[in-house]
Length: 266
Image 1 (tube, rainbow, N blue to C red):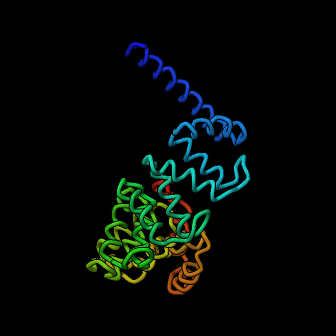
Image 2: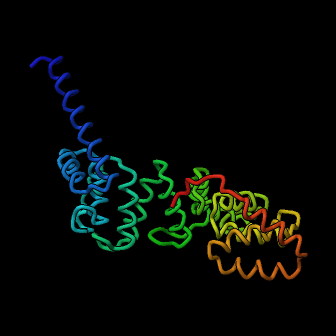
Image 3: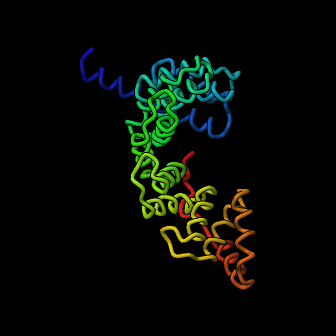
């Protein structure tokens, strides 16, 4: 068989695989898991990393198959070995929780690190937390904040808050209340209730910001609407020191507020 014919055959096979994958993806989105399984399983067995990852998710969640963490981990490993970052992250979670694999904090950290180094935002945040806790790695505040910052720069709201609070407290990083306020605000503006509470405190106490009871109330109110107990209490305490018209103005600001981004990473 000549090289041109071999090349054309390869393109044909790749085209068929792509079509099968798209059909499987459409079925998965439509929650027709039986059809999705029919399309993805042959591709996964042929070595398609994306199909392997999705098959891992189906076994992980029990979608179209009986839930089986061990089988999920096997498919994640196949995909991760080909460089699939989401599968690396999922393996990190499974080793941390002992689902389908033995509980192993060191292996968990290793998989998170593999994905984090490739830019996987959730793995960067997870690895930062491990360095704070000293779980699977030696505790290191400097490394923790370095990973938090990488994730924060990608818009991860939990990483933004963690970095902001560490700047505020000087935890593993030089204390910097200006940087603290900026990162906490980025998280709060995405709608993170814990960050909204923290930002409310900064306005209430005049830390890195001029004291502003109305804005403090607004941020407390936004967090309180998401059932943040501390914010509910802070809002009520602050209200006792405010004029009725200022409370009304703050509530109006809260009701009109919209998050700057709805793409919040877990």
